[in-house]
Length: 89
Image (spheres, rainbow, N blue to C red):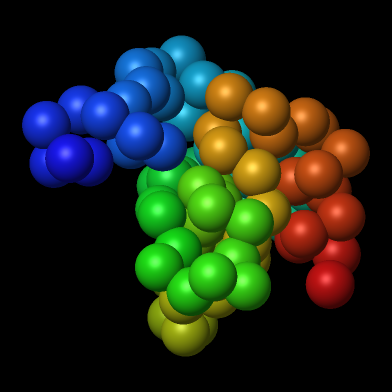
């Protein structure tokens, strides 16, 4: 029944404001320039060992490989400390 909005899938998707907040924190923590790109997505991990929803932050520096960092929380629950810790690892 999850396909019809029931179960753990029944939730409001994250807003753009939440994404922009996390992008700004990631940009600051990784010391990125305006030419660099940060993308934030919330994904549902299908593995039973996963925490459910997690936030994936892509750090894309010009001329370098994309770096992905994860926070094991939905976007709405991510704090600045979470982002700084994920970027630092």
